Image (cartoon, rainbow, N blue to C red; front, top):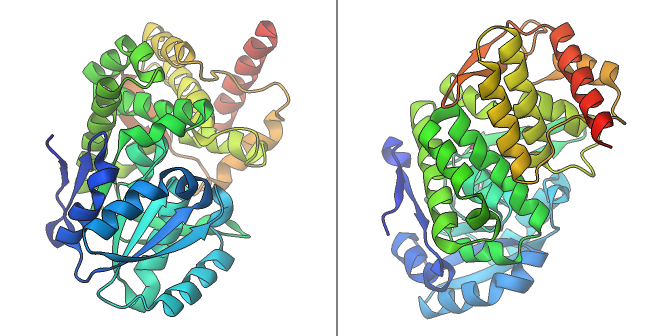
Length: 368
Ligand code: GLY
């Protein structure tokens, strides 16, 4: 099956996507690694379930590996865990020729990638993502980092992997909410860049949510192709990459209001995409039928489409100026002009954001 290439000059790499790839990952890594030493950084739950095939494959390929377990989820992205990793790398003899492999969701990729970017001033790094969100988004693009008490991802680097190995079979053990959260980002790619893919995702909803291998592999591949296209055009996030933030401005307000608990990133983005489409309608940029098609599609996947009533609109709106992408105190929004095409604009006022949030909360009240 053809790989997806990310063309970045000497930092180019391929994304391999294939069911059962984990069983053959050792050979792929052996062809790529400068020395037979691999430091695997894995989330505990992932290692318990999927560590065995990776370990067997690494051994068969003649690779010596050390395993460094970190907590599941965002809690791993802390300076304390970075320090522990450095100590563990020193103890395991991870040298300049070694490769660090991130095995798990987006958080482990960010932590292990930042450790790889900084250990001995930078060692090779590969991503073996096991959640849909990480497979279609976090493992591709090279942004790595950890959270600080003053904010998310504040210490980080651009450090491209040497390869990304995606085995869609690992999604079999992913909790359903995590799967749907990843599908929100898949839907996003269609809205921002590819109307045909958006239609394909709509038509293949049942196959995707029931983890049919062919449909899932195609969805991951097309998402990676679209992300690769964006990253190739704007590796350092000075322009086009902003379109990947569709749904994320209001999504971040929702995540912050929820205290980063109880709502998945993809769920917050799902609501954010619906509200951003409504902002585009208000600005006369998008037909209301297209906004409704976006809402209806997201809803059909069982993803949330309205802001929970319990959330405080004043606090949410005041958070707009804290947005990392805000310029001159005004948040920049990615808004669709039609399905398959978005623009970045600062035409959205806090008052408009307030109005769409209030309207959304009324709808959620109407449904409960
Ligand atoms: N690691 C995610 C990105 O670079 O976009």
